[in-house]
Length: 177
Image (cartoon, rainbow, N blue to C red; front, side, top):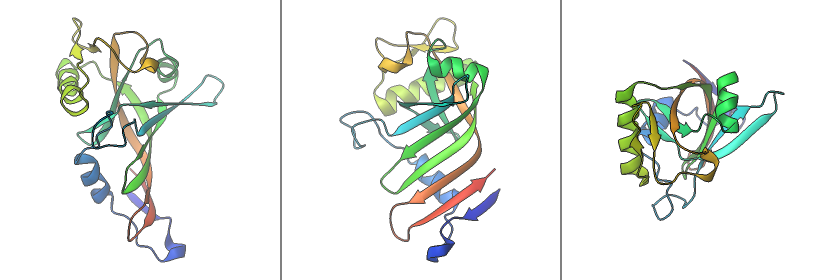
């Protein structure tokens, strides 16, 4: 991994990716009424066919060193990812703002889908269940931008990330994985 200090001009030390991972591993509640901001703080950007960006707020999870999200395959982001898996996931926390660049991969491993469904239910209060295919989720409701069920799980393989620390000692760092 390459670490690039983006705040050398201000004599700030580079941030450690291990510290960012520990913060993500601690969780970040997003559901209304949680200790989180009461709104989704993750945004996914995909590429339209003409190369222009398409961004949506969504309920993402951090698990096993990567971001996970669900979407309907007929949504714009689902169609965009089927054509070009490159994407950005952004997250705003009290301590830092993070942009992670990578490739989203659709997950069809029933064990992973079931594990993440349990995480969505426990961490976000979303009453999703694995559907009869074993590879997608269904629920009485989802985000209005997710399209109709079933919702498919995607994981992002990180290529690079950069973060801006919003608390002492402050700092800004880029990592290339």
